[in-house]
Amino acid sequence: MRKIWRTSDPGLLRDVGLVCLADGIVGVSFGATAVAGGLPWWVPIAMSLLVFAGGAQFAAVGVVLAGGSPVAAVAAGAVLNTRMFPYGLAVADVTSPSGGPGGGSSGGSAGGPGGGPGGGRWWLRLLGAHLVTDESVAFALRGDGPARRRAGFWTCGVALFAAWNVAVLLGVLAGAAVKNTAAFGLDATFPAVLLALALPTLADRRTREAAICGAAVAVALTPFLPAGLPVLAGLAGLAVCWRRSGVSRSELSRSEVSRSGGLG
Amino acid sequence: MPLLAVVVLAVLTFAFRVTGPLLRDRVTVPPAAERLLSSAAAVLLVSLAATSALTSGHDFAGAARPAGVLVAGVLAARRVPFPVVVLTAAAVTALLRLAGLK
Image 1 (tube, each protein chain N blue to C red):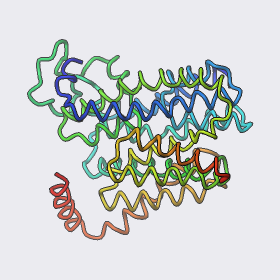
Image 2 (cartoon, one colour; image 1 turned 60 degrees about the vertical axis):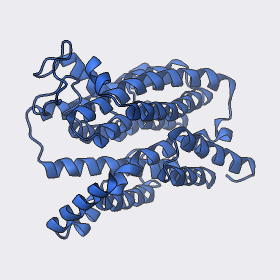
Image 3 (cartoon, one colour; image 1 turned 45 degrees about the vertical axis):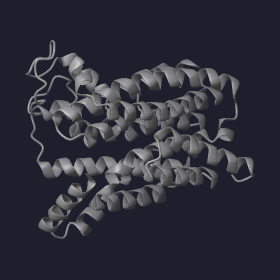
Image 4 (tube, rainbow over the protein chains, first blue to last red; image 1 turned 120 degrees about the vertical axis):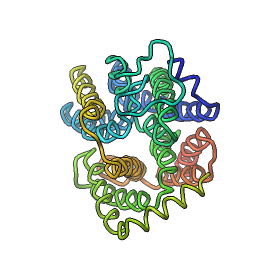
């Protein structure tokens, strides 16, 4: 773990802190919403520790508070969390803190205490998998090079787990006191966090077009499909836009190179 | 919501999370597929943001929430710090509701 902190730059720690603060507000909102809606105090707390996925937690609790069955609530949350599978594949090389097999070396930072160069310890890999979230994946993907990717993932994952659970606990306490959470606009914080997280990856034109198509599909289908499914249906936007804009491969890769050079 | 439901959701979620890293040891993912997966993640994020901003259950959420999210999105695009973005979303939505907008 020490290796991870050593490769962390102040910018990373600052950004992770800001994300934790932002998600903390969402966590307070979640705890307060659940308890104010009439759920027992331990439900949001147990969910936050064991499920640790804000979107699925909101979806599952939302279904229950809207009068849905526990089965429907689990289905909504689980379907929403199927996105963890592509996330897991995308960050598979960094979910082991000491460097996974085939994930490339972590640069010159070898020799950390206890960090075997091979597969990494199995329980750390399982812990790393539990820390796969929208946010930790976003931090992993924006890092350049294996060491920075790994530092981004673990710094965000560990900090967010702590912040999220403390925040939900605070929300549970607040929810018992404040009944009308909508008056404070807390329901707007969750989509705002997601949008802010996605914005940097939308610099790529193809991804941006796919995301806009996907969002349109998801919103259009929401009145007709069970909670959670419209978001998955949004992936259809990926296929449509990818095909339309994928006219010339060489042209695309050239424009990508110039764009990444311009980002600096 | 019984404890069993929470545990089942937790187990399913962990299964989704751990499958990728486990498969990765045996399967080499081509770069094109990896780029596709990164884009898929972005598409899901934006789709989730859009549905949770615009809808509540199966219905339109009202104008106050999407307005707050829209203002927050503009601030985020202008690289305003995260907490300011999130608090602005809540504040704009709360103020619009105070003004009588649903």
